Length: 230
Image (cartoon, rainbow, N blue to C red; front, top):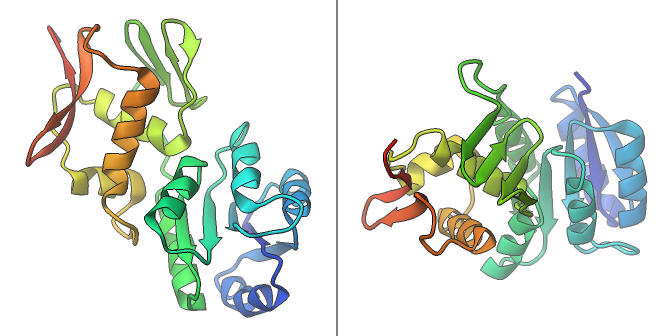
């Protein structure tokens, strides 16, 4: 396994602080000081994980994250100086797996890295690679979703939420259960991110009750992928 981590931040002092802590965990470090260099280093070295600052010259972290997500599911942790919910949601919607708000401790960063990497689990052998609820098709290997034979532009996390719900039709998942399964038990962020992801999935699928399946909110309990006549 390629145990390298790309740190992309235009503040060289932050890189100097983080580097020894992450190397102590057995990772080699690749650095980039701007967004375009981060993209080049990603393509060259294919790191196991990326720490990506939002505010960088040439290309900001959001744009870099979106470009990487076009053809890669490499874990990305966004680093932001902003703590507003809108910035956190934008980070996750861009395809990030987690975010860290400055100022932070090196120990917190290492803990976040370990938590994200622990959540990368092989697909269970007893589950199919594709699930079909016509006209919906979910391909978890290629991280693609089609509706009426047209690709739907979902983020990595949105696909994982949809996949988890659809592999257990008519099963109610609490918000905490979805957080544990998708984001991991070590997730540090806002639990409302589940609600945001469900809302965006529904909007992108343009669900209006016209199919024999739907994503339902069970008030006070959670969410379920409701299918008629399963």
